[in-house]
Image 1 (cartoon, rainbow, N blue to C red):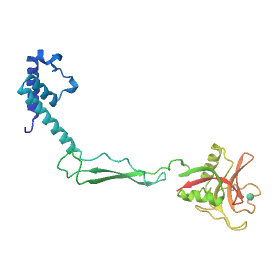
Image 2: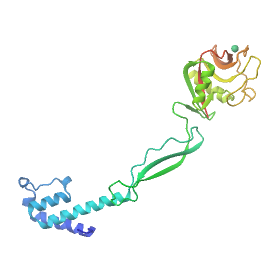
Image 3: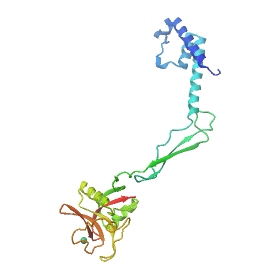
Image 4: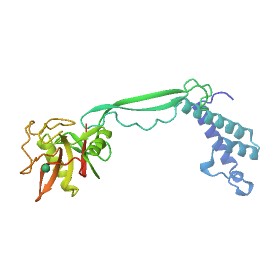
Length: 264
Ligand SMILES: [Ca+2]
């Protein structure tokens, strides 16, 4: 059977209904098995009905419907000869206020002859678009500093703590702006933590402070946060609570403290 036009289908439906009416005694007779639930009406069921009623016309109509259904199915396959898109991958930018790309892909069978049969030569389509970065999961964004911070609750010596942050792609938080100092205090308060390693080491009590990232806080205009009597000759920098207030202290580098990483 060739292509079926919409007109032919409509004509067929009208004709079929009139045939139903004229045979309504048989068509609704559940005893003869001709009753068909509405949701089962389709080409195949019409063919079966035509066979039972010995009606060539209904059988032909049924076959027309089957062809029509196949044609629609094929058209749908032609419209979308591809699998579903994969989920978007993570944005290549991992900081707020920075931009990167994210992408997704899908497999298509654009050259296939049998439209619904997804075999043969595949094409991988890629799609990508611009995205704004955000802090990675478990990090908190501080708008005042435009940075992502995370408190690590394990107690480590200074070099192990610095290494954790390096592995995270960042560094120990350097309190080289008032905003970063305030963010640090806020993190410590909200987590009930009394002390953390921050960025800043020196080779001896008289040497210059060295920072993994950023500047010397005081040279950068941060008001001194040293506890009175500090620094007093140790080589690693911490924030420590004293009488309900946080201060900078220098501490022995092999001591154990929690840490805050900053990722940039
Ligand atoms: Ca000290």
